[in-house]
Amino acid sequence: VTSTDGYLNRREALSSALAIGCTASGLFGSTVLSATGMESMIDSVNPRLFSFVGGATGPWRVTSSKAIVGEPMPEVSNLQIVNVDVPIASSNQWVLRGITSNERYATREEKNLLLQKQAPIGRPAASLSALIPIRKNAKWWALTQDERRAIFEERSHHVSIGLKYLPAIARRLHHCRDLAETEPFDFLTLFDYDNSNEAAFDDMLAELRATEEWKFIDREVDIRLVKA
Ligand code: HEM
Image (cartoon, rainbow, N blue to C red; front, side, top):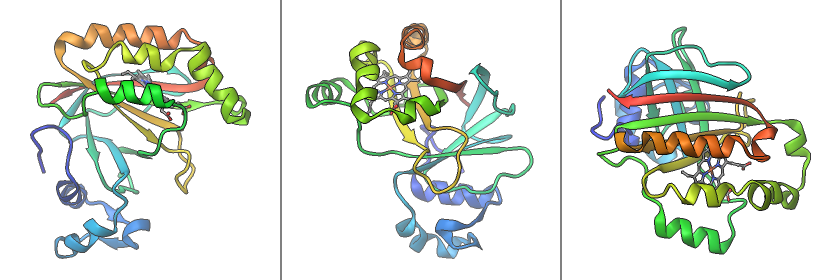
């Protein structure tokens, strides 16, 4: 299955799961996906759940994969981003899963600014993408919400740094921590932009990585992608 913008819709994603021989469990109830059952499955799948499948095929080609902190990810040539649960990886691929969610930190004022400036991910001209899975340490998760907010924004300026780069950079945040299984990361952050904004993206990363918030990150892998 191919898609023009590199992101598969739910129907395409299910066909794609079939094509990569995925045996569905959990949400699909331990059956091999069949094309005939696809219609009813579309309704039963969590629309906020995304799987990032690293392997030999997919509309995004991996141009680099670097461990910034902690363990690297196994090397793959391509990535598929699908809006369904892909629970089982064959030997040559990995799967990272996360769900989009409500906001935890943004204030009303920040949210309004974000809504005014941000662009949706998947613009046709955005031929470059970055998937940056992140895990935060136990010290972070032991803090209270107000303590985390103070580090995140008042002391690290995450939103005000990020806002400077909108709408050139589009983003989507996926949470892994609340999924039932033990996941290797807490967040899967996804960005896209066109060629002329690659340097700006790197500048933003340098700014963010120098903040107090980033001291709580104990695993970060920077995976760069180009539309294949
Ligand atoms: C494109 C500019 C960016 C903007 C506008 C932005 C904005 C935001 C906002 C508003 C939140 C809070 C969501 C909430 O209220 O729960 C957030 C969370 C987050 N962002 Fe960014 N961000 C940007 C870039 C980045 C980059 C480049 C990374 C990683 C390399 C990143 C990683 C994260 C992570 C991991 C969280 C979750 C933090 C937590 O819940 O502990 N962001 N971002």
